[in-house]
Length: 560
Image (tube, rainbow, N blue to C red; front, side):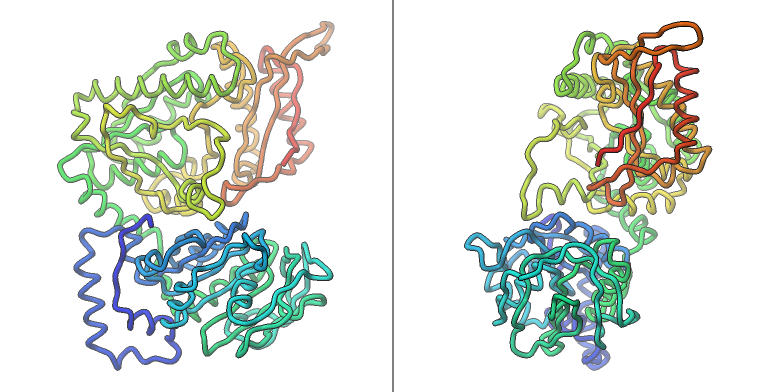
């Protein structure tokens, strides 16, 4: 578990889960005990720990399990995700108000199919914790409790029309609604005491419930945007059925996290590398708000940033975060020198990472701060945490880490990760709460190695300058045409190793190809290419070819 346990009296958990049947006013002594416990923990716990209402999402390996967490958070209820291999102690330490079982690629009757431990099921039933099973989660529930799951004669992948019956789960949901299905197996017999509350043309038990046992299940995926009523269904479960009050807000998080940071830092200093991206900017603003001048931010100008990035970031942060002083280290010539002649992407990443660490050590040395009295700010987000803790387990190494998490052991700095349990949209909301301008809050992500990995070839000064100019024109046009905020990430790529023959005026040219990329993404874990209007692409291409020396061809990437 990422968090120390927030231990609440078990009877209080019952009351939250059965709010429709239990009058809390009849147990004043128990209520006083809860308030006392919460007050005792307030000064030393994190904002997440202080959330009495909390949903546990159990991951069975679905590619979209993280979306369940996002939908719960959108309902202003705190939640976290754990692997289905979790132990009973894991569940008890988290002390959830309710449980959501995710989908997954397995079959419940496979010999290696994942299942909740028997003692976990007994705990959920014995403590009357509301449970919602989604897709595989529904099948796991029915399979475990005496129902039957079989391979479907007709598989359902894609849109389906759902016909619902009266149920608290479908509050404010129409009778006939579109949903997104993705399953081969299906429930053919429901456990004793359950009854169907929805069906499709090929799925008799598209949704089931047992209100006495506080269990619900759906075969479709309410967490994806392809199920328009899905967010409402999840909200009905966490707010109405589980009785969560919806107290998870960025306003409350900002206040409590500032208190937590101040307490954790003690008499130490905090140093942090700022890139100008939304994550580092929000993290820096949050820590500065908490500890003021004891936070020492710096920015390394690698020569591989966006055009005039170092100057703009310094001006923007110092203007909107009163009292912040950002140290800028110009190390561009050092980076160009070490990258001279290097074309292999992974080698470039490692060189850039090593040089960044050297610059980091230089920055700390110039600040004259002892390593043992410093904490290191890092902008880790929840998708990074999910990546290493899901049922699927840690991913294979797609790319080496380039952030300062790889500092040498001799520096002995403890990490400060104030946003490690937030999603990107929550980070943006937090930035607005802290007073950062929309330009900072809505900035597209930018990789640590910067333009070094967007130049397919040698990342020298000439290529970097060329790409900076093209990328700057691209972003300018996206902003002026109103497309920038509709896109999750947009950038230009230079292909100096691919020369293109062209004719400009009366002259034949033999120059570089520039590739434009733009994707849409709500969670930055999946993405699809952005359908850019042709007239916008035409103008961007025309400007780049006419204004950037060295580029005579522009392409648009439509791969997903």
